[in-house]
Length: 305
Ligand SMILES: NC(=O)c1ccc[n+]([C@@H]2O[C@H](COP(=O)([O-])OP(=O)(O)OC[C@H]3O[C@@H](n4cnc5c(N)ncnc54)[C@H](OP(=O)(O)O)[C@@H]3O)[C@@H](O)[C@H]2O)c1
Image (cartoon, rainbow, N blue to C red; front, side, top):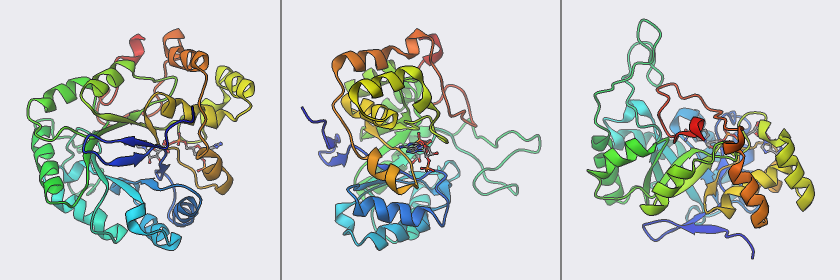
C-alpha cells in the first residue's frame, strides 16, 4: 500500500506528511529553495523565527505562485517571546506577509530573558544562557490557546517537549497540542514519547531526519544495506521510515535535485522497519542536536535503550 501523503491533526485538519525544513538555509538560498519546492510537489514549509530567514521564506512562497490556502506553513514561537505570544507571532506573520499560520509551535519549553547581550540568544555575564527556570510553561500555552481561538493560527503545538513536560502541561491544557516536533531518526526513535503522544492524539514530527548538517546518518552501513536492498537512496530510507510509522518528516535541503528526491516516499517492508526501529537499542542510540538549555528536553530515555 502506498504511504500516506497527509496525516490528520487532532483539530480535524490535514497536514502534508513531508515538509521542507529551513534551518540553516541561508538568506539568498532559501527563497529559491522554497519556491522550487512548492512548484515541485511540496505543500508544507517548516520555519521558525530563530532561523533568521522567515522574510526570505515568505518571498519564496510568493515567488512560487502557489495560492496561500494550498500551502501548510508552520512556524515557532522563540523562547524570548514566551511571555508575549501574540507579539512573537506577529513578527512571524509580518515576515511572511500572511495573516495566519497553519501550525504554530512553542519552540522549546524554556523561557529566555533578553538582555543587553542579545534579544534572541541572551547570555548571563558568566556565559550561561539567560534561562528563566521559574517561568510557567502553562502560561505560554494559555497564550497559544488565545491566538488559536482568535483564528491567527489554525493549529497549535509544541517542539522539544519530553514526557515529563507534557505531563505537566496536561494538567492545564484546554486545547491538546496538535503536534510535538522533536529530533527523530532510527538512532533516536523515541518509542516511549511516540506511545505517549499517540495515546493523547498528538502527532509527532521528525526533525533532523538525515542527522542534520551534512546528512551523516546516510552513511550508516545498515541504512545503506536497506537502501540497496530496496533499490532506493539512503535519504529515501531515512525519510520514508517516519511516514511508515505515522510521523511527519521535515528534511531540509537547498539543493534542487535533493528537494525533489526527498519528496519521494516509499512503503518499507515490515522487516526493514523492524530493523530500523531496533537500531538504537542495539547500541547506536545517538542524539545529534545538543540543546542549549537542558538535557531532558524533547527526548525520552534514549541513552538507556
Ligand atoms: N524544532 C526544532 O528545535 C528543530 C531542530 C532542528 C531542525 N528542525 C527542523 O527540521 C528540519 C530538518 O532538520 P535539519 O535541518 O537539522 O537536518 P536534516 O534535514 O536531517 O539534514 C539536512 C542536511 O542534509 C543535507 N541533505 C538533504 N537532503 C539530502 C540528500 N538527499 N542527500 C544528501 N544530503 C542531503 C542538506 O544539505 P543541502 O541543504 O546542502 O542540500 C543538509 O546539510 C530543519 O531544517 C528545521 O526546519 C527543528
